[in-house]
Length: 429
Image (cartoon, rainbow, N blue to C red):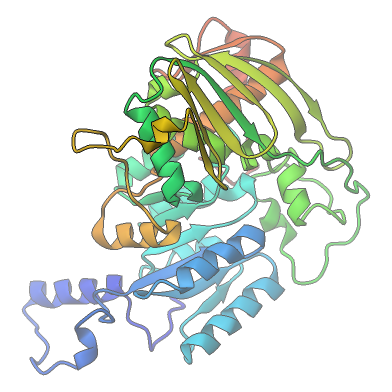
């Protein structure tokens, strides 16, 4: 096992203590003071980061600030990235605590890692998380969650079966004004629900080279592709935009950004199956060249209570309208009309939602305490399924009727094929 000899993780400390007690071989009672207090090995978390590119590096930067954790491993298929961040971390720690890995399977075989962040391209989110969960690690997974309903079902099952902590990277749930907006809706301030409008940024990205070129040194391209279909390497494929806008790897920003307002919508509507639309019909436009994911969409639907659902590109936000007024929630602000609704004080009998002030801290706090996170896997699945169903409506040109309790498409056998997506061997769910 490639584990630095001068680091004792919380997991390793607890395991060694348990073995000593079980065998009756106990260490001397004179123990170094570092074994106690906030920085004791029994309280320290060992964190690993999978993917340290665009969003992945932000997750690393968030985790490194947590006072009771150290990043002990960095995994990336690009050698320059993994070596650079490993060197930065070891300089910060003034010790060879962090180890670089090319293959996530080798890193996840270590039994001294408590938690991992997953900031890979979208097509790797669920396959990487499943390996981590099955190896006993808690996971923070970037949005969007997956590329199919089947992947969503698989990761939810794995979190539950293995009893792991899960945080979805929809960090707006750790903003106070988002929480307040959801609380106003949850407590009936809007009266009877009439409509929900969701908007997410989309940059109309098109183009991207399809001309094959040699794979650059230092990139494990086969591992970068992983479960995605095999394609020749091109100039733009392994870039940030290639990750976001190529349908081999993603659904574009209908999922990549749509996850934020959709998850906020769920929070306001109850975080349950009633908060998911049961009908979807829509149109969309797809890019050309490598960037062939949908860049424009117009989805209309209906909730089980009859309220309308509308999902389009636009500024990040969700606007919820009821008989008594409107609440509009975005990353930047909360708008309430009439304003008097916002001035009403929430009382002791009102619903108060999970108070998280920092998304990464909330995850790592939950790893230590085993408390659920503010964005658990059940919410991630509900949110991501809306993206999958919206895309199905565009691709089939038909109305999709969804049963969110049974998680099946009603009365459309041909549409069922869209619930799954093939993975390239040897990768499986």
